Image (tube, rainbow, N blue to C red):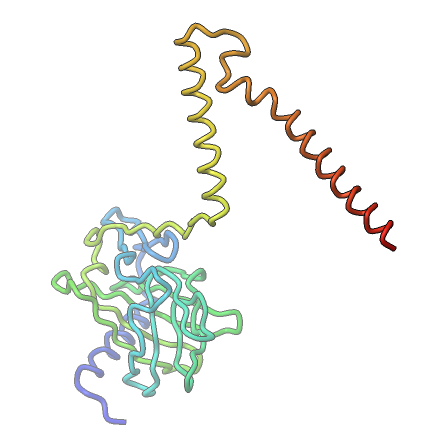
Length: 251
């Protein structure tokens, strides 16, 4: 497969950084979840939360690998679902479906000696490594997918100003859908109206110099409700019994 000059540069940067991990100094980018890491020398925080979608889709879908020609999808910080690849960070396209190549919840940050690297894994041993290359001039991120140079391990490079310390603001997760059901809304409306009815009724009766039980709004009506209900049950019972007796006489 013929590689373009840009592909060679990308691969060279990746390999150089990975090889340098063995010679890395005490400088670390300590992870704080899947969205950010903080340099231990106080130089700042790399925050990628503004790079990912929060609606379950991948910010970078179907990016073709420059090495193996396969298509990969990646969503920084937040989980994405593509077909059978659910709540993932990275997926590989396989026919009309996708294979998970890294869970968002497994994100581990490290430092290559040049740039921070985040690694995602799956229970069956697959792995995706994304290196974040600092480019303060790049407001729109660019994802270069190298692919599976090693079977089961996907390598990617993300060029972004967010890979530079303190360049991008923190974006918190959107609140989950907490919409109420129709029944819940009806209950809330009922008790709200009941509360308003009682408060205004009490105030009205108080201003009209009523005391004790008479303070309750429509006290005369509510005090007779139980009697009205009892009379209603007696009437229904009497009517049903009369109807049954007439049927028996006809037989």
